[in-house]
Image (cartoon, rainbow, N blue to C red; front, side, top):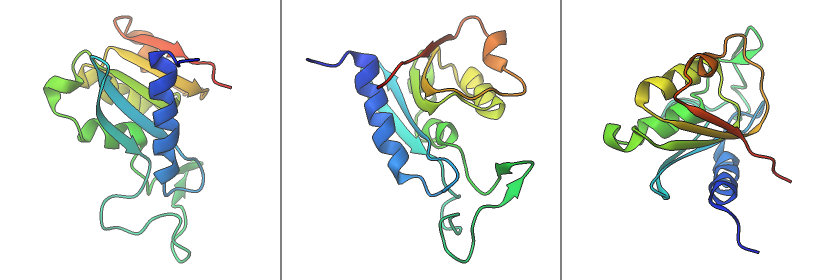
Length: 139
């Protein structure tokens, strides 16, 4: 049976997360507009800096969060031109953190589809009713 579009793009986000270099959590994101992939991202260290998975480095944890990594949503949004972000859908393997939520709101993304729950301290998406948020049940 053929996958629906949301399941199709989420399966790609699941593949993208396999590139993650933070062993604490692998997250993938795919930005889609008009059923075309505009960009992808996974969580990992800034370019040319050591990765968490490097044996001599490890995670840099502050308040139970690894601050060495750039989140998948950020890497994905950085890859895409501003006009392609406006009105797009971002598929994320995990519900976005508050900082990523603010970037999603600011860049003009109008739909967030996620697969795994995360309960943030502040939920900016709840304050942005123009953004549709969809939990995709995978399995």
